[in-house]
Length: 140
Image 1 (cartoon, rainbow, N blue to C red):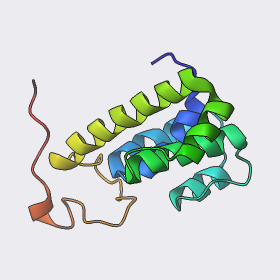
Image 2: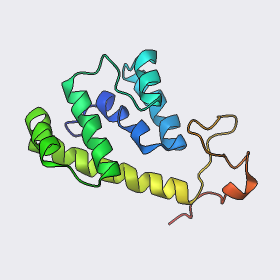
Image 3: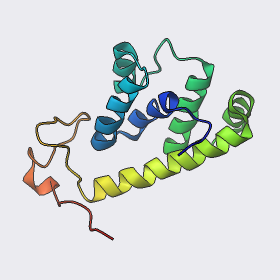
């Protein structure tokens, strides 16, 4: 996707999904686009890093609201349009929806992490609980 949201900022949204495979993939991307270990550590707890600027904080606030409330209240909408502009806000809503759909699929089909990778978020992996694994999603 070649939009207005740079990879650095897009990567800060991934932990909000609370999905092991997405974090596994995007943590590496984050390092590649310059996220520091301190920023990654903050993201792993759900916090904004102290180094995040207002745009990054707004992107993450919108992402959290979309995932929890499925909408934006008037104050956050005003903040987002002021900080991001309508075009970037639209892009962000579509991106969060795409990630949400992807995470739903990965979760429903219990897509495993690569061998030897521990789960990041607190839930059993197929290795820890054989009833949790259902295999890979079907090829369409």
